[in-house]
Amino acid sequence: MSESRDPRSDAERTRGRSPHVLQAASPSRRLETGLELIRAGEYFAAHEELEDAWRAAPSEERDFLQGLVHVAVAWYQAGRGRRIGTERQLAKAIRRLQPYAPAHRGVELEPLLAQLRELHARGSLELPPPRL
Image 1 (cartoon, helix red, strand yellow):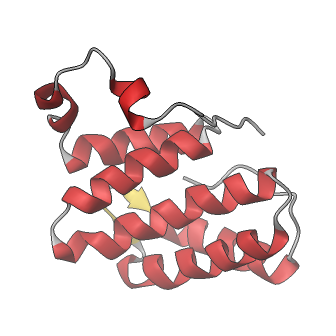
Image 2 (cartoon, rainbow, N blue to C red; image 1 turned 30 degrees about the vertical axis):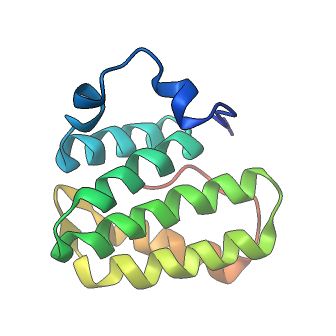
């Protein structure tokens, strides 16, 4: 599993970028980028991108985006060998995403939810790539 942990501070990561440019990405674009990062196995970066989308989203979208944040964090925690953190994140992802099933914003949630339930019940840290 690829792990993209960026130890730099926000100020270091954004040095040289205009604050206007940093705020320009829409929640929809951040969602797309977050999903791309999850698919690429870049779970830490995905969680940050999706959190930014979550913060900027209207209230009716927030649980959906937070559910995807939990997906990214579950895989990140599994990669770090943290069983309890992984199990908790899987449970939170299920709870947040279930109301949006079977699909929302172009994301097929039924295959993902089935996978999340299976992995949560199994309790393993060996997680295959998310079904996104």
